[in-house]
Image (cartoon, rainbow, N blue to C red; front, side):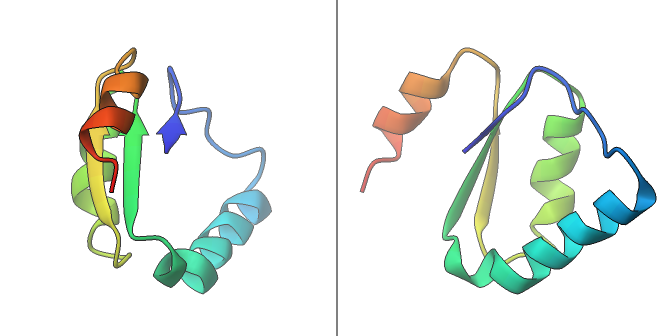
Length: 74
């Protein structure tokens, strides 16, 4: 679960590349991703990220962490 009021970005281009490499090397170990934010990037993340990872990606408005946990517990 990713909770962020806004997308903070990366400190540098190198940090962004390191993050992408981490995702590339580990995404197969994650089945579901919940992006909890009111930032517009939440909708973008749900649609864009699903093209690059095997996980189910869903966007939820901020403040719905507990509802998210309870509705998708397996």
